[in-house]
Picture 1 (cartoon, one colour):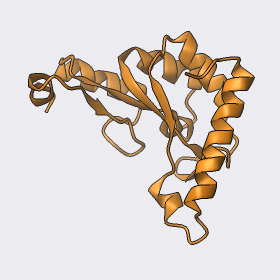
Picture 2 (cartoon, rainbow, N blue to C red; picture 1 turned 90 degrees about the horizontal axis):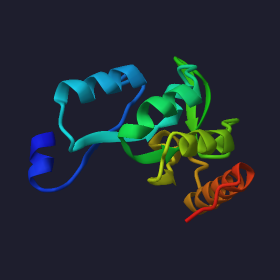
Picture 3 (cartoon, rainbow, N blue to C red; picture 1 turned 180 degrees about the horizontal axis):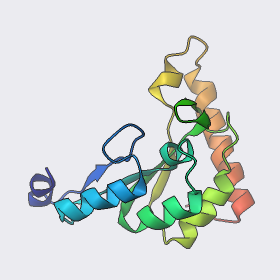
Length: 149
């Protein structure tokens, strides 16, 4: 797939995901090493490492250099007893995460993601979730002292 992407001048971004083949930064890095193709990069997803109790700073430092995009969502609990939430519903420290991303050299895009598991809840309101995502990210950027672009 990486060769196919490279031949077309695009980047293929793989997401590390709990219970997947790349469920830790080390496993993601090993996959990148084995494939050895510049067209294969990472879609960074801190929530999957957070529920495993991994350090934000260590996860970010390991994967930002090979990441092309970043998702933010919230979470509560630890694996295997966890829930993915809309950004701002849990206790994740987004400002600290943004500072770690900046320190590691991130200059790519960061966007909020609302898990399909959350969207399937009968009380889910997409307009309210969008507003919450915007407020949560704006507050985090302000608290971190990082200008949004």
